[in-house]
Length: 160
Ligand SMILES: [Zn+2]
Ligand SMILES: [Zn+2]
Image 1 (cartoon, rainbow, N blue to C red):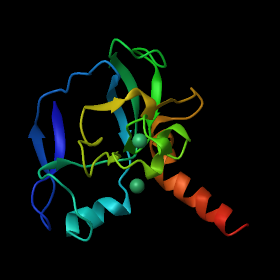
Image 2: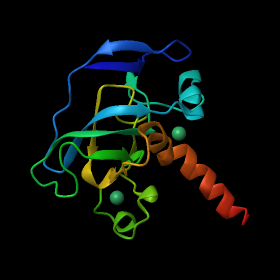
Image 3: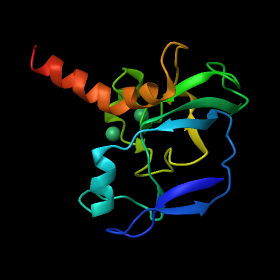
C-alpha cells in the first residue's frame, strides 16, 4: 500500500510502498478515507516533538471503512464507517478500565509511535475504533478525533 512517511526531520514527507498490516485477534484494519493534517504533524516534521521510530507514517486524525477484523472483534465489522481514537491503548490497566485511557502507560499515538493514517490502510485495536454515523462525512469524522475534541475540551475548561 502507499504511505506518506516522515523519513528525516526538516525534510518533506516521502511516498513509500509498505506492506498492508494484518490484524491480530483484537485488531481492526481500516481503509482510510480521510486523514487530517494537524499542527502536531508540522511539529513532528520540524523535530519539535519526537517521533520514534523513523521512518514513520504520520496522521493521527483518521476516518475510514473497516476492511478486516480479528477473530475476537465484536464491535465493528467489514464495511462499517468508523473514526479512530489517536491512541492505541492496552485496555487492561487501571487507567484504561476506568475510562481514562489517555493516561495508559502503554499508550501509543498513531502517526508518532506507530503507523498513522497517511496511508491506504491503518491497523488499530478495536477498542480505539468508533462507529461514524452516516450523516457525518469522513473529513469531519477524521478531525473529530483530535482538532474538534481539543477545541471542545478548551471550551469546557474555560466554562464558556
Ligand atoms: Zn491532531
Ligand atoms: Zn492501559
